[in-house]
Amino acid sequence: MAPLPRPGWHPDDRPAQPARESGVLVLLYPHRGGLQLPLIVRPRYDGAHSGQVAFAGGGREDGDANLTETALREAKEELGIVPGDVKVMGRLTELYIRPSNYEVTPTVGRLAGRPLFRPNRQEVAELMEVSIEDFLNPSNSRRERWQLEDRTALVPFYAIRGQTIWGATAMILSELLAVVRMCLGEGAGFGARRE
Image: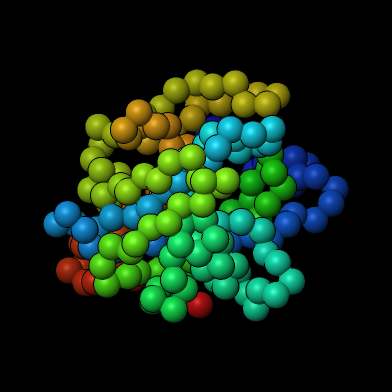
């Protein structure tokens, strides 16, 4: 799900200053007869990710022991998720995001049931609960040519409920779905790379 060519893939595309570490939570829970995950729509603001669909997450703070703790802290701040309720299953591949100069580490966790969401309206314009089945449905995957910064790119994205889910969020989802497909193919339960 990476745009081709992808801004930031080449070392020359990276800013001179080191990327800021960040963590996002890919949270799975059973609901409505299937496996769901929450995504947030960011509010409109003067910044690189204004109005975009994302996972709950953000930059590492001094008190965070690791990036999984960052992801859990941010999910609590943004959505009211109780960190102690989340069973951490592992991590997905780190991903560099050029527009904001973040190196993002996705942590995969699960809950026994649907959480009581308390979205922080300063950070969350809308909460989207999306079924894994929606992402596995080929009719929800699209590709278009977009102008991204200084280049034209072929951008793959998910079109779900009037939202365009692309960029880092789509790339993380794509890896998650590859793991889900592998596990379903093997008849095993869901898994991710262990910490």
